[in-house]
Length: 330
Ligand code: 8YV
Image (cartoon, rainbow, N blue to C red):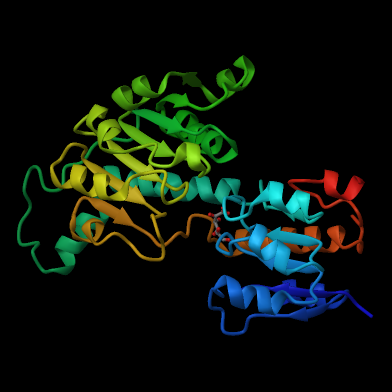
């Protein structure tokens, strides 16, 4: 009998079809995010689970699903998965790095530019029928070319955004990260390492790309925003919770900084109502990785991992992007 796997959300039919070649597949036709008790109920007897960045995988779920051997996510961020608990339960976990780096960097750059040049704010003005004449300072924003980009979190996506800024737009790039890049990488990207305070003080455009963890919770709050230039923009494409959304709304309302671009929110898909009422912000519903080819590649990588973790296909036993491959070598 084929092993049984669960696909927790609607995904591309071709991804499900590949899984059906090897497994008994149950899908989530309604495409709602199952509360954990329902996810646990659906998982009974299943050996594998295909998830997104939303399902919470923790010790409670793992205790309740003793047949589970692999949890494979189509997201690169895995703050929704307790990896040590999975390892302790002998469950392989994988994420989906690399395939979304360039697409997500494109979007981060777009949000930064839209915030700097006030694209959303001015479009709303036009749609409201308020555009009756030209004026010398109408929606005058700040320049991106030649400005200083501050990157908080210099992983793969941070580096891809920094490259765009330095090579494409002649930006001066400064960054802060838990660990410093080696000198050769800094030189290739054209980025200078600074401490967090310098990053906040010197950046014209701050782009946040750090993974979410207890350590990065509210990394940017009222005190940090107060250190930034009043002309600065802030872009968050990392995770909700890295920025204190209430403090950001307050800072935007009082022009502590000029504008912001947010793709991720605390408690999403709910959005702090205060953010919805400030004009100087660009808001998008967590779509930075959402180009069709990239979303296909993310789903396909999760399928590759699930097949390999459950011992079928060309990578059998060696999931390409496992986070705890030691589980399989035991
Ligand atoms: C995903 C993301 O859209 O990969 C991530 O970590 O935040 C996004 O690319 C989302 O999590 C889908 O699973």
